[in-house]
Length: 60
Image 1: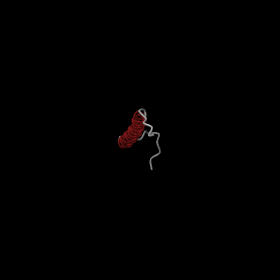
Image 2: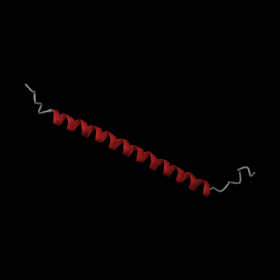
Image 3: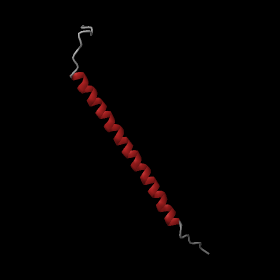
Image 4: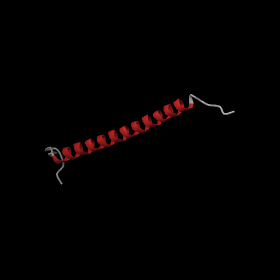
């Protein structure tokens, strides 16, 4: 006799939702890291382009 499980489809759907949520979180964190890196690089570029040496800095 074939045993029919009524909870297996629910378990499978729940497991898939967990996988999807984890992948979405990973994607979001990757995008956040990229945005932070780009902002840091832009900030550094802006800082170096507007830097004026103080009279106490060694001029080479």
